[in-house]
Length: 77
Image (cartoon, rainbow, N blue to C red; front, side):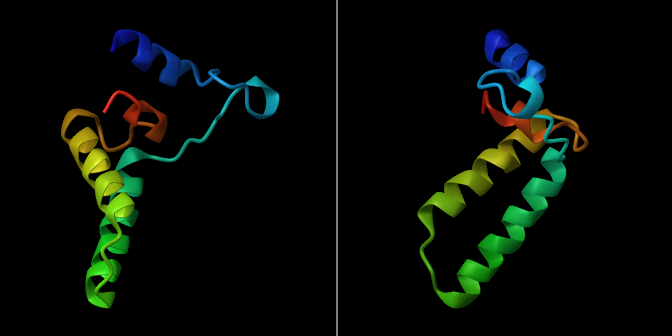
C-alpha cells in the first residue's frame, strides 16, 4: 500500500502532460459530486452500479484522508 500511495503522490505513473497528472482536485469535492450523482440516480430510479461503487470508494477514502487531499490518493482504496 505504501508503494501505491507513493505512486499516487508522485503522479507520474503514466506521465500525463508534462510528466505529471497534476489534477489538484480534492477528494472531498469528488465525494460530494458523487453523492449528488448517486442522489440523482436514485431519483431517476437508475441502478448505476459503477457510480455506487465509485461513490463508496471515495466515501471510504474520505474517512481516512483529509478532505483537501488530492483525489489521486484514492488509488489504495
